[in-house]
Image 1 (cartoon, rainbow, N blue to C red):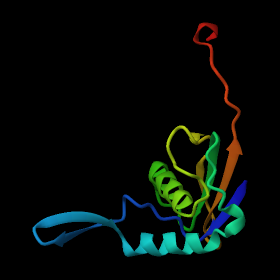
Image 2 (cartoon, rainbow, N blue to C red):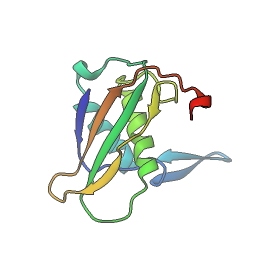
Image 3 (cartoon, rainbow, N blue to C red):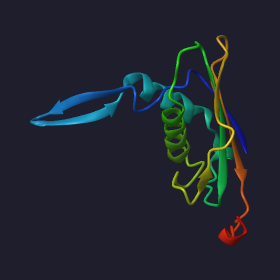
Length: 131
């Protein structure tokens, strides 16, 4: 399954805000991330909402609008959270998303986006003795 989400990819963790409610402090995603998540959820239509629960490799290519250093792990985390919230995948645990191969960050000033591909992986048992 291939899916393209348009808009500048934003990490969830690096753009958090700290709020106080009474004597308790809590961390919430930034307004920018919340808007990015909302925009992505609007782009994911019914044909992608499959609640996949097999074994999949997640391959993401992030096209950023500027050549700044970004945290690929946090971008992947935000993308996985959006895919779960949009009901594309059932959960983002290691039993469903078994690998994140071929993920990378590239530059496209005019058209920032993330290209997502979920590739089904057959259940392979590795014999340690043969390694």
